[in-house]
Image (cartoon, one colour):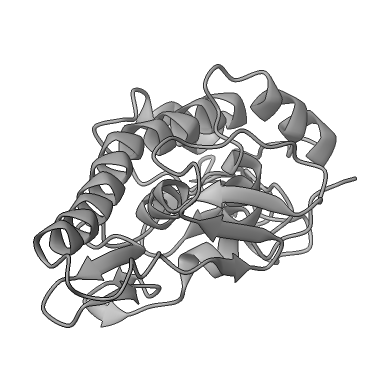
Length: 228
């Protein structure tokens, strides 16, 4: 802002709006108290926020310190909310970390019906194929796949398995692998799918981001360390 009084020299003053980041323990408690938050929500939020639970840029970042944390392509805050049909208050997501967390969980929950349907369809296709081809060798069960401290598997995986977030090995369903992947990736492609033509299971680990092959988001999100 600049001003001038009469013929005196022009003067200026810089001002801005700054926020205060919540502590990690406060974010963790908020997630624990958010209705319906899935077991993987803390992994996603920690990964999305640069593993520091930042709603605002770190105080050490010159020029933009403590302004809303903006990540590519256009995500804000601890959950890197970009504004979707699942978010209710996108402007608040930019400045309010509590709203940001609530909307991040809402987005996670909005992905679950698709993740559930995709896994059921994949398993049904696999099962139906072997029913029609009963003379072939026995079922080629979906392989277990360990991603950091989580083992995704076929067993009990037509419904998600509840777990405790204390860094112990976790058994979870491929349905949940879909749900994690879809938070930041190609929702049309399930994590584990059955290929009837080639008679094998195929893992679609890579996300498609901005029309290019991106990271394995499931691996990235589950790579963070949670408190004991």
